[in-house]
Image 1 (cartoon, rainbow, N blue to C red):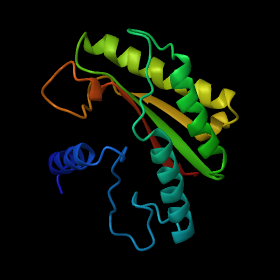
Image 2: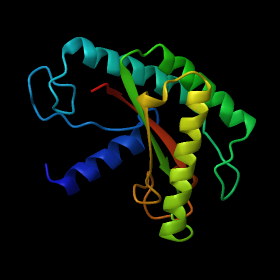
Image 3: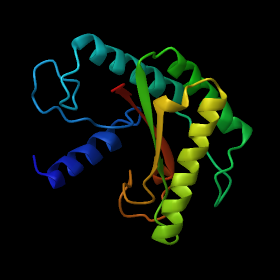
Image 4: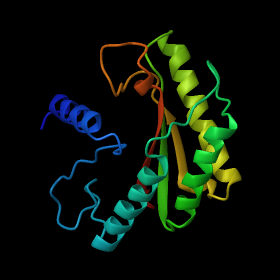
Length: 167
């Protein structure tokens, strides 16, 4: 599929399945982990199990921040604690934290805010016992909306967790 078709398919899958936080494309390699890197079946199963645990921990919940900042209130830190508990049991796997904003405000401010929020979640995870070298944090600003069209849509303000195997 073209990148445009993949993006459309990913948006449709994510919109129709709120418990799914990301889509990984399989390049068809035998025994691959969906990312085409040849991971064995056991590693792929561990990734799927861990991602399922993370998705279950955050299902129906939102990690929120104070308006215009990367400060998390206690209720959000409780969710991060649940995520950390799952991650600590996922030995040999990494987590990518994706920070997203809605489309209100400037692109530069949104990019910086989303990165700050992803970084805040990363720090909170390390404070809860997840090794820092297992975590990457990336801010996407408003470049990957979950719901297109409405610039201020709350669903676009989110933190996503994606489990990957260790390199």
